[in-house]
Amino acid sequence: MKVLWLCNLILPQALEALGISGIPKEGWVEGLMNAMDSLSADIELAVAFPVPEEFDGKRGSFRVSEKSEKEVSYYCFYEDTVHPEVYDITLEGRMNRILDEFRPDVIHIFGTEFPHALAMSKAVTEDDFHYHPGRDRLLITFQGICAAVAADYLACLPDEVVASSTFRDTVKRDNIKQQQDKFHTRAVNELEAVKRAGHVGGRTGFDRKWATRLGPEAVYHYAGEVMRPVFYEPLPKDITRDKNTIFIAGADYPLKGFHILLKALDGINWPELKIRVAGQDIVSKSKIKISGYGKYLGELIENCNLQGKVTFLGRISAEQMRDEYLKCGMYICPSAVENSPNSIVEAALCETPIIAARVGGIPDIIDDKTQCMLYDCNARKPMDEVAASLRKCIEFVKLDPERALEKGKAARMRALKDHDPQTVATQILEIYSEMCAEDK
Image (cartoon, rainbow, N blue to C red; front, side, top):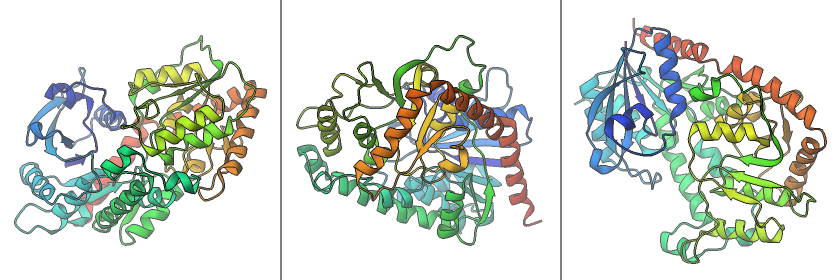
């Protein structure tokens, strides 16, 4: 069986083969690839991914791992990932080239967030002049869901913040409301892509609901996810957590809810508090470069007396992320909507006390009675109300850290079971086999 994966980012092995420096982020796809290799799956695998323009059209192969003899082909294509709301019709030609050369039996698209998902869906299903195996050989698995993001993007923001624009926002036509509009545009492309798929995969009741809306004729499959390999390693025996440290995994746009967390900490009597944020610092920008949301976060940090307590870590590796999960007193996911955030699963694998919003698919991947603390979050409610609910959870973990650690241990046991690499790989391979058996 020949299988083509279409990914949003470059796998680490391909980065090395191409000589591109940087921290790879598509580690969970790498984990699935390694798991399939360990099962000795009888498939010929190829991976396609977007690259800078100078690498467009490059192809080659890499070994799955140092211990493996299996080779994986890779195909590079140029895409303007900085503007994912813009559909570039020339992508369809790039997808056709890849299909013509590799001629896969199954095409598996990871995520619906970028134009290449729609371009590949079109290439698979409609171009009579090129190899196109048809919709029954096309599987799309959900990551984020653009339509849901667009609906809740403003996430409890005050009206005056939504209406504001900095110099940077005006020049780039990228204020908060325009950012939401771009997700609406991406949702239109997402809808068309999913409608063309014969199969969709997900992990939660939330994404199953969206699958029914977006692709009512597609077959829905449970499709688990494998985390990055480092998170399956045995935990250190001497974990020392800093009870005064909160760790979060991103704060660069409103949906991630960092402003809700800051408001929840407003006036809290916590002199030793430290907030560590994985991801870019959008706050410490000059007046001509700062975004409206970054400006608002800076004002909140000052107004909530949190100056000097927030550290942005920039883009960090999987190993560095694991260190942060192991060192912090609690991990908080304040997003206004999520499907099945890998950051929560990674935190669970590290036995980190977890606080998250009761939104989207989160209640399906972790239980708030025994494994974490979930708080009520409605993106359309006043921020003070949502922040108060979050603050209660923070205070619980502060006052009863032992109970929080017990929940962390239970969360790890569930995550090891639900995200076992070989179990997930077996699930995915069964889906591929079912797809190929349909026309026999």
